[in-house]
Length: 434
Image (cartoon, helix red, strand yellow):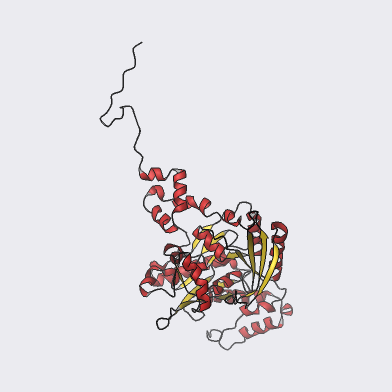
């Protein structure tokens, strides 16, 4: 039998029958172990830039999320069963904030840090503490009252309960249960002293409210008048890589829109990471309560060298026909404000209809007085002297009214449509996260 004929060799050294192609850099970097390692070492700013270089990298950030922003893996430093812990958060409407949330977004670990959990209501605080002690082996360590030196800037809390346990490596794990006066969200927005720590983790989402300055530029801005006390607190963030600045320089405002004008928690300027919900019991409360809460920063500038600071303006918003409490920016007289100028009149009208459905003999006195006042007004269209129904929450007693929380996302979309039709499309908000 004759030997097989040898393949004719080409000038480049390959044989005529070979189909091998030289791999490109983008193909090499997309190989899983390499891609995963690259995602782990790149800062988020560089990771986002890489996704915009070519089609092969366009999904790099989305592919990195499950491994590199894994909330359960992060929580394992403090609890043995993260899924059960997050179910407890969902059941009790708890929020995580502080340094743990910052570390989650930055993908770093500060060994000396603790875990801060914000809860409203004595029953929720007691229940969560009992869960941590019975299921996770924590014990109560000490109590910090409102107004103590450590929490002197936390004006919207009752107390801080510190729980501790010893890890397997003999280090101490510490959880602080922060009992809030108002909703956890309002407390977080109103209580922190610098923008980099305004991050929120719910049972199913993580929100970074000022991601552009915090993680793209590594800057943080003051939310309190500068003092020696806050200077000491800010020094640790300087050591961790953040530049501390009082307010934006004028030339920075155009490229830092998250710091200027009215905002909402779920808007396009917020970095939102959806968390894995496997094995978690979801609550009845919809995400829209957080997502459609609003706030606004106001700049306070002084003569140099005073650095100035921002004031976080936000208040609680209630209605007789809303099941949940929302947060609204403090802009009652500002034309076009969503909650106070757009949603509130609609909710008041719906409240009036629902109150009138109640048999007059069953109406509490203050409710009846408000209804009579509406019907007996000399000028029902006088905008300067409205009858307020939303503040009758404590007078409604056991009477149950229908709730219209489900209308809020649609109303917001309509408010946004009307607003952008007047100012142009540049400010139109997108609820989609890149």
